[in-house]
Image 1 (spheres, rainbow, N blue to C red):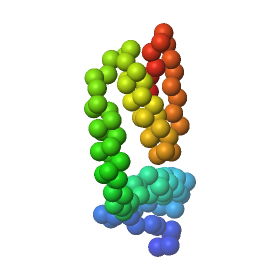
Image 2: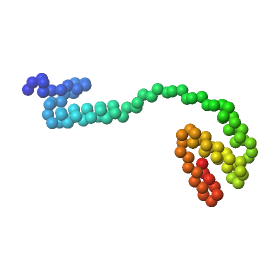
Image 3: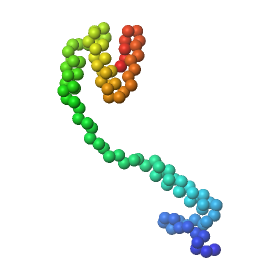
Image 4: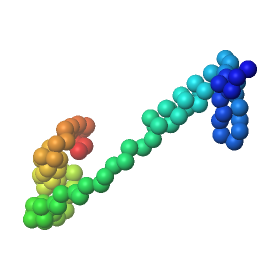
Length: 104
């Protein structure tokens, strides 16, 4: 038996080049590949674009003009404004209606 027929692992653990040794090596190698593939990707944070404060305050003033009850026309106008703004941001909006009530 030659030295080439042995593999030395950490802490002096020796495995002979046999079926069990090869299976153990393949298992360890597979585990290392799996853990490497599952490692989180390093993400560099980017600065968020600054909001248009004039449009924000205009929208907020419009929303705060009057109390909004479900039957109020201002409530419908605020819903329409929300749909418009979210659509501009790239969201696909659905407005399902049940018994005269619309969810946004």
